[in-house]
Length: 349
Image (cartoon, rainbow, N blue to C red):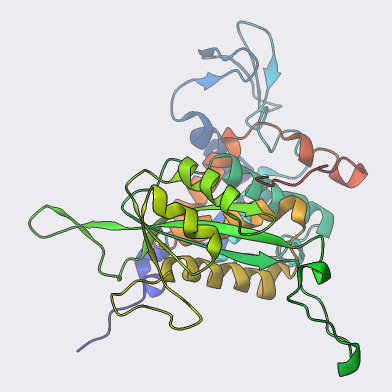
């Protein structure tokens, strides 16, 4: 029997290359930005919102609104506003970001684009911010797997055994320790008779929502589950007491990982574990460190990569660019290296 080819090895997965982007002219890059932002029709003034054939200043590649007189460009009012690099560089950054299935570090991005590390750092975070602001937060249904994983809490053991502490105790935990809580919905496929049927495992999950909490606890789990999971949904969870409260409103099935990875009835949290596999590889192999201020963005990036793993890189590229052009100019990413940094982390409670 012939083995089925992995999607990422197929021609369907490769519909765009970085070379194609680099071979674009600035005029083509400008037209791509314009098409993705406004389509093939008239442009919209970001100041007054009027859609018209506004005056186009061809030399400056800008429009002047016929109603309010505001002068704007293809990036005005977006997260790329006040850009200093050519548009083609931003397209190349998105193409590299889309091709990196387990994330890309700012250092690698700076080398690939030939820009400073600071520039690449801000650029990659702007992409993550856009993915975060436009993530699909509609409620999950069907079968949902929930689990948590801890980051930024590693305590290096002392050299001498006599000097080592019990790192499991709360009093010895770091204040910076955080928990990434993930909810993953199993994909629904069409059966041969046209009736929807639960996936047999070959497709996996199709929607992932993540949150950052200080620890797995019943209060946060209750609030977040009611927010993102429909009542009556089948939930798979592990033996943590944080999920005991879910039995009241959901058909909750548990697996004790101290005993087994999967029960005899097939109950497991594999969908959540597969997300954390990619999340950890992104952490250890690419970024190496997640700052708590932006941990929610990193977690959501891994969720986005999981949900789009069967999309072609061209579709992912267009989707990320579209999200960036829908994201308003962000306060946190204007003057970052001059000291304008986010003051608080995206923490649920």
